[in-house]
Image (cartoon, rainbow, N blue to C red; front, side):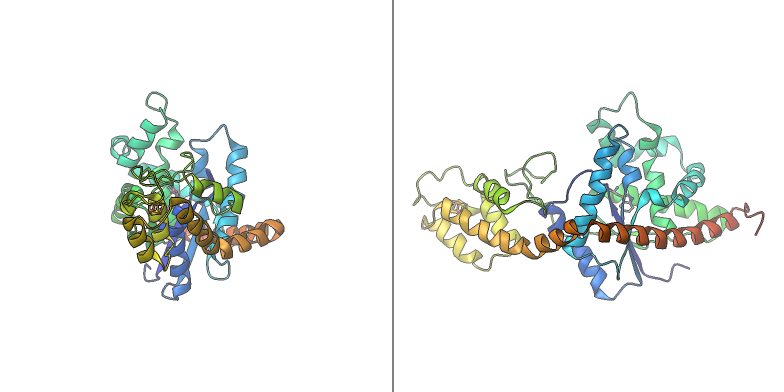
Length: 335
Ligand code: TRP
Ligand code: SF4
């Protein structure tokens, strides 16, 4: 038990994935998947978790399950190497959540910093849905059902991982070694900024380039990106370090980065030309992703099959864990 190196992570389907998600985490996941260093990889779409604060928008969640699945396929997550599935299709996760609820106090949940911030962000203070309040417990079920050991997540998820570890600890203490304690696999990359210079690239902030954006849309967005405001004339020297165009040249690994920097500082580069160069590089960077996405958009039946088979496979694994859990808890009456 616990000897297998299992990677597990998930995303809430609340919007399409953008280039910040790609550079900050998806790319790394694909590398982990392809590294051959891990025994199994589970990647799932957390639709049940998304519903905890979107209960009135089932259509939005459903649509985004498909969008996220397409993004997964587009960036190179591979159903031959990773089990890709939909959270709600694994009822065992609810069962586990129910038992884990006995191991967590209300005050512990209230102290969870991520939950705290999210409650404020959603103005839930006076009317927190119980399901939302307890999603850290359900997230612990997600992780432990598949014996996830390494969980690639962003920093905002650390309190959830900590809570999961506490649950595992308590469970194993009371019922005997059963569950595997997970570790966060933190992305070392900083948070990706938006085209407007905002510290965060966000779905709702209107400052993101989505993996599914059409070339014309990307062009328009980059033409509107924030540059050094002091640069007025084409030959004014400027500071690339405060320019989002430069930031993105760097982010996607433009091999002429030094030239861009030098020319900008020397006033030898106009912002329009600089943006046009970025547009070309960006389209080139996203081309393989866009092509793959298009292929799967045109073959929705393939996406459906991948998700269906992945969910069936995942269910088998979760069933096995539930059996072990029930045995440990002495509620395996008819075995
Ligand atoms: N909370 C994660 C997010 O906001 C999604 C998620 C659900 C998750 N269950 C998980 C991530 C288990 C890692 C492990 O995107
Ligand atoms: Fe930014 Fe390029 Fe203009 Fe310099 S020349 S401010 S790097 S857009």
